[in-house]
Length: 119
Figure 1 (spheres, helix red, strand yellow):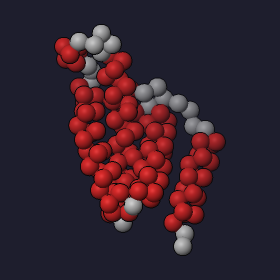
Figure 2 (figure 1 turned 180 degrees about the vertical axis):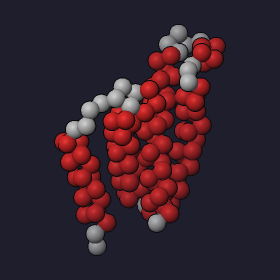
Figure 3 (figure 1 turned 90 degrees about the vertical axis):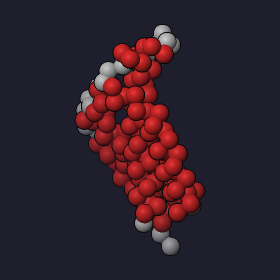
Figure 4 (figure 1 turned 180 degrees about the horizontal axis):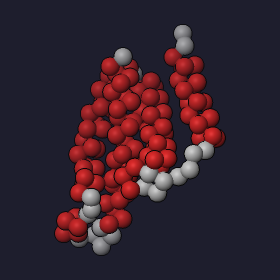
């Protein structure tokens, strides 16, 4: 059970890290290291540290539940978290309207997990 939780945390953090890294890239296009001082908000600079944590959680979850289940939970939570980030406009992302088709897609993912786990 802990392996599933760690895989889920990994997927959620991957989505957040992607948003952070994209924003840092957008704000530092000149490529100068000194431009990192101008990144706002400053928490966006945590993308690298999140990457190290992601590496640990992926390794842990693979050891705990295996590579297939680990990847399945990581990707599923990553998709759900990414949709929530854009739905609520978190971390400065443009807020997007609710769409039923995306909820149906999430339900299909959950059904897929249930089928995969079913013995």
